[in-house]
Length: 265
Image (cartoon, rainbow, N blue to C red; front, top):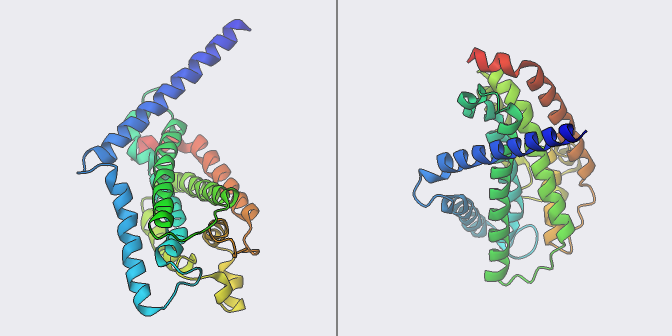
């Protein structure tokens, strides 16, 4: 038993070192080659929020919730960006790390976990900095409900992971899937309640958009930021359920076909 425990410990340490090395490699590749590095991870959403806030403040006297445009759009844009970037990065894990996956010590799971940890932590940092900066700079006086905010973050991470793992197989198996997926998901930015509240829509539109997991994530996030907003229609169980199903299907296909996928492209 001692030999078994020692072997398990050695494998765990080896896996940790592999994941850490993959994270460092991607950090240098993604951020190390651009001026400012990690600064761009913050400047990009700041620019997006600024443009949206200016544009909509010229058209409306106040946002759909509260009285601060940057905060309202941040509660929708930041969770959406967390999901979108995470799903996109995980979906290309096999392609990005393909040269390293031929080594016996590196597995497709290592590549997925490394990308998930690095990009997930990056977006957590961005969300924390921007959300509290807006509240502090504009002195909005919002009383935050941290369990709801944490739940929304976990929902975005889980959904991004599920979609990313599912697409990881499809993108590596079918080269055309990247274009198809881009066409399918292009309207998501408009229909994920970043710019509006679900309650403001006609009942038929609400019934259709309810099946979009992202509106639930945004709803729970806004529930945590605005004390007067309850979003009773939002269902974390629905988001977690879809995320688990997509993750399971993706991992099953990757376990079965990942060697063939590596040798085919």
